[in-house]
Length: 555
Image 1 (tube, rainbow, N blue to C red):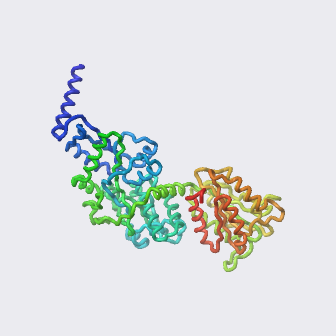
Image 2: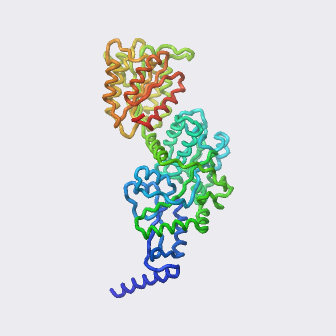
Image 3: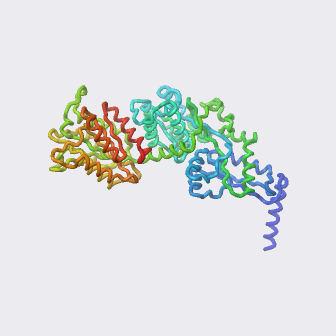
């Protein structure tokens, strides 16, 4: 038996040598393990098969390339942890993954040559494209920001629902955000608008391009508009064969490309030579044809029949925007993560006597205006937010107690006595009344609220105390905490590792007088104070508050 086994082994080795000699090389196998992004893996496998059949003698051995599929986000996570796995070469869909990794660890190998490209495009179902063009106009990153801006309630977002790819898991999603951000900066679009759009998109993001493309055919009151790579649109139409094909829409300002770089991770000198030889294989006409036939463009932007001028595809490559530097890429990833944090907010509503005074030219008193500001602000927060409301005025809940816990902080979707917290908040805010004889009592209330929010701090959320007042400041004839004492308390209690910020919005003729005090309270906690002259300004103020998430606690 031992002799038979030995003979079998010898015959196998002999067969390998003879076959590879016929292919142009002899000697033992030199294995190269390639992990490629799932979209390009089938094409890379075909190219590897041809490469192996041709026979390549490297360092006296015969090169043999095997290709497996690997989701770039998963592979990047492994590399970040110092675990390359069973891989000598990595072909992700974008150098953005490598840029993010190298920003944290410069020892990660730099990306090599690009073997293919695919423009990041907007995409819609063919059935809604005419309506989209009517309400949205020409496809553009600026238009997408406008439609997605959470604060632009009267904009194209009424008729268009923008869908995003989660940039934490998808390079096309990150590339789309970077392209939109670059266009916004270059065209002078305010950062508040960009933040407003990012906030909306964070609530509709999906991880997978196939899932996004499949959802485009779902009918609703608003036409869905997504982002994807040009190649994924082609694959979706070719493989899934939807009843109504998806149509790529090329942004007018240009776009970024998925660039499929070769990243050599092996430290073995001989295997590296095989990797370099295989990298050159992608420059052959046969390899480039394989890539074009699969819906990709070659690095020079040339596409094949797959992306000819039919079905919305355009043969000419769109204008390529300049790829942002590593710092910008890392900054966008961090911004997305921070904006994706949940919201935990306690709103303090001034119901003191001055709130019953009329607001000239509106037909309402200050209380109604402040209530409308609160209701307007609530519309900007997603359903997963946790929000509560207290009212404050001197002796509101008994002697020496200047606040009433109207609705405790909790999820908007939570049921309270048979009513959703979201509906209960709207009900209370719509019917709240000023206390005619009440003074402000702000400082005592703020201490209690800030103490509670600090104690109940949640690390996966942005924790905020919102004060809505007419700006008259702390008016408490019976004493209470002084302005100096509340500032000392806030400075002592504020923890930059567990930040709870104070956001103040004042409306009324006395607001300007109290601005200095308001600024001091906000600054003590890394917050901000605003004076509103119009109800609709509150959208901008809330977006300013959201923008502070990106720099907290060092704003």
